[in-house]
Amino acid sequence: MTALVDAHPHLGVEPVLRELSIPSSTYYRWRQAEKEPCERRRQDAELTGKIRQVHADSGGIYGSPRVHAVLRREGVHVGRKRVERLMRQAGLAGISPRRGKGFTRRDPDADLAPDLVQRDFTAAVPNRLWVTDLTMIATLEGPCGSPRSATRSPAGSWPGKPPHVRTPTSS
Image 1: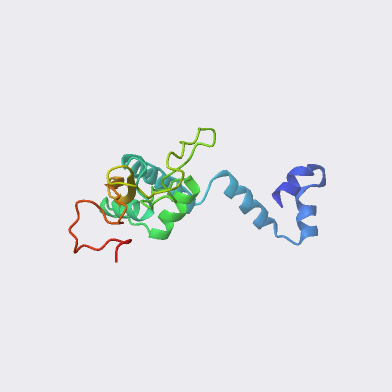
Image 2: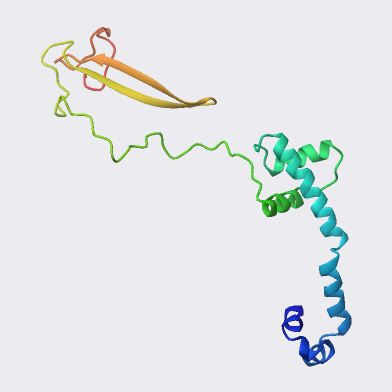
């Protein structure tokens, strides 16, 4: 409504309001609110400054639950949802400890390693073909690779293992 009156000042305020069936007090209240915001908006602006400070002090790590807890410890009485809303409006977000989708990101321009055994993993004699398995384990400090290497004998058992230990290929 204020945009309409601003776009067509030659029409006058009162005739436009009368045509739209809007009381003039409503129009002037909207105009006043544009000039000086209400108490709630002033409090939101002040609180957003405190939230930005807490978020910056945490190194950008804290999300809304932790920011809310810090504000409560400092004696600021504010609701959790209000902190969430103000952080969202300010574009602030915490860092989530969730894992990514995978570990390997292959470079499409890189040359592939040659397949030296032509996908034939059987060895004619022990200690001729080495097989390796790499298992990624998630830890608090990041992913950790756990390699296992062994030679494979033609009989299908792993050298150095006692005969009573079963392997996937022995029965």
